[in-house]
Amino acid sequence: MKRVAKPVFFIVALLILFLTYSATFGIKGKNGDNSTTYIKGVGDIRWGIDINGGVEATFSPATSKKATKEQIDSAKSIIEVRLTTNHITDYELYSDYNNDRIIVRFPWKNDEKTFDPESAIKELSATAMLTFRAGDEYTTATTGSDGQPVYKTPKGETATNVILTGSDIKSAKSEMYQDQTTGKATYQVGMVLNDSGTKKFAAATESMQGKIISIWMDDVRISNPRVDAVITDGKCSIQGNFTAAEASALANKITAGALPFKLTTSNFSTISPTLGSSSLHAMLIAGMIAFGIICVFMLFQFRLPGFIAIIALLGQIALSFAAVSGYFAFIPSFTLTLPGIAGIILSIGMGVDANIITASRIKEELWSGKTLDGAIQKGDDNSFWAIFDGNITVVIVGVILMLVFGPSNILSAMFGASTTGSIYSFGYTLLIGIVGNFLFGVTATRLMTKSISGFKFARNKWLYGGAAE
Image 1: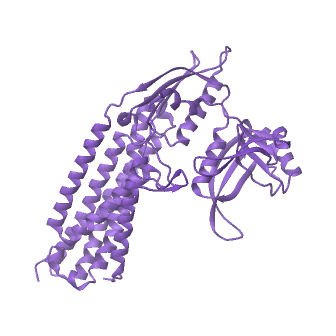
Image 2: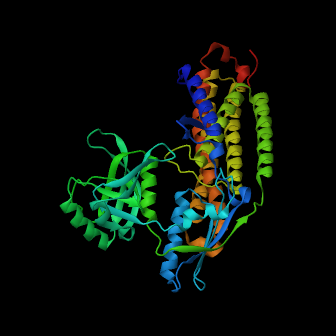
């Protein structure tokens, strides 16, 4: 067996414990009077309607003229973009073409205190006007809740010279590219314009090379890129010192564009949870008790490999919640529903199974007479494909559930958005949990086992389930 350096055990274990702590409690700080969240924790998770309740609203065009099917569909798609931009996946969205209505149901925010449905729906029905303007002149500069400057109200040429509007944008998305100067991977926003936008932008970039074209949402500036080249094919990119989250946020704002007409709220109400926070608290206590029983079983049955398995399981659980809360900038947060919790529980069970298979194989090799190093290596080799076969089928199922029951697909129309959101949540957490199983239950467990076996105190075969020496 190829030995792993002794410090590896402590490095891997400390990294897992840090992930567990930060993913559970988050990391927050103070920037003057403003509270800043550096890393999101479990408290930042947005719970689904079934757990936390939510809002139901009916939107109608604020006009006496009957809206066309295309206009209703356009308004519905933009509301959907605004929901997904806020990482809300547990929603129901319906179009009523005969009565010119759009009906939406979505859960409360995780930090909701007033539970005022009228306030909760304002962001969805707001008629935000996206514009690309010449120059970068503004009237006022204030400080936002995050401590960053907010530039408002264009003036001068910026106020009068509108180059593009939201209707000229076909799509916008965050992209990764390699900076030719530094060689580092960084992020940008790639945009595709429609035919009218392509012509307008070609003329503007030809006359404004080296100058700024600022981007505004209503009267708030959201970006101010500089023109580096003439864009004639309708495909351009906005580059800057973007993080993954910043590039994604800017792309989402551009994509949201503007509603085709102003919406009025003809009806709104609250939705009671089918489960409730008290049941969630009971589930948490039950989960902690179950994990404690698993820990006792693993320690009693497998001794040192059982102890290592407990550390690996903590990492897998932490990763599951981190992938939901928005812990990682490259993995957006999303709404966690009851089926989503079931996906986490199922994946944890498979993580326990993976550790049991490996520990059992090592134990069997020891009783067959192999040395400790040989037993660990042979146990790892013999258990890998059994774990792989069992988990890869679940990965396939998780991917299929996400693709088939995602927020927008043909089955949404056939079976309804409620089914879509719930099953998508289950598939997502199940998939993340299995990825965590391979990362922690297989890779981290084996690294820690091979590392700690290099210490003299850990060379006794009894610690791995063999005969006492």
